[in-house]
Image (tube, rainbow, N blue to C red):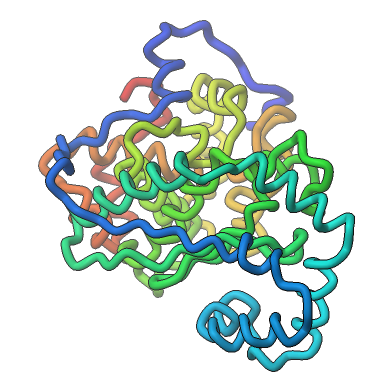
Length: 332
């Protein structure tokens, strides 16, 4: 079965709201008494005040961990020192930084979101340790870096569509390089620590469920954030995909894709593409990731006694799929 375009149904507002705005987690979570420490270190401000190579060398020497993990080199790297000197002294990059600084201000919004997210993580996982958070400015040389103990945010990467300069990516990828996507992106990457998988299961279904669990984790940690920000889909794509999921599901079933193990075939449905033309000209890329999230969401609806922790530590994608009873239905 192949569709030249998506079919659209005028469904009730509740269905559209489900697709555009975050759904409540299955569990009621009170984080009011949980304490977290979110201290954002403004390396962007500190680095843009450096003027000489000696100052740059001293800064890098005093922040070895940052240099090792983010730049993946050593503080003595001559090329890095020269690049930072150029960024700090060139009139064009200095003007670009002023644009960045004006857009982001004091980062209160990002800090508040991170506090919400970290409180929720600590609610579910009391041993969670808040990672060091650093903002920097690289003149679009590098992107967001997230590890268990360090998060580095190159702010200029997330200036959004009105920025004078933007990351060198196709237009269909640029949407996610905007301020509202920063914290959801961080949480999706952090979810990897808790997202158990079966390394022997190489099926597309396993990949779909993995992504679905990561998005479900992110939504649980950021309950007030729109689903479209969690998965980095335009609102219009969320609405179209939600209303056409029966057709998407039929395509996956008709073409026996769930247990496909060929990496090239799998990439068509879970990888970044402007469209999945095999399904339809309006079908957005990463449709398999979105469908995996629907399966996981249905799994939690059908099995309300399963906690988020239980979900994340379950490596059996087929078990999650079968117990979800998902068949492309609209209702949640």
